[in-house]
Image (cartoon, rainbow, N blue to C red; front, side, top):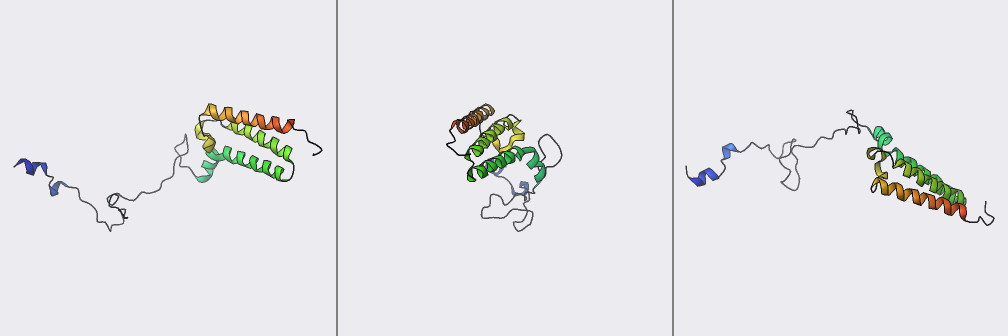
Length: 145
């Protein structure tokens, strides 16, 4: 056998490929994925457990802090729109402090509240919440209730 024959792959050694029209393959505009089987969606296990996670379990275990902070901000906006700006602003500051407290939870429990490092998030939210509460309580009401 010559060196050239040894360097070239033989067709008999090549793995058998399924037909492109087969339902087990991915078809599309490119041939790059034509050989791969279709991906089957699977449930993702909840953090720290072997059981598959559901939407409600993920909402409770991961996104509950974000949902609670969002509801608190909505209450603050309702107060501000109802011309109770001082109460709404104080609620906004308190909700920001609650978000800082939620950020102290483990990273897999806070969901989208984790933006930067834990120290930065907690420090920034605490300073912001404290300043907003101080500002709302220090402004003279000027006859507004």
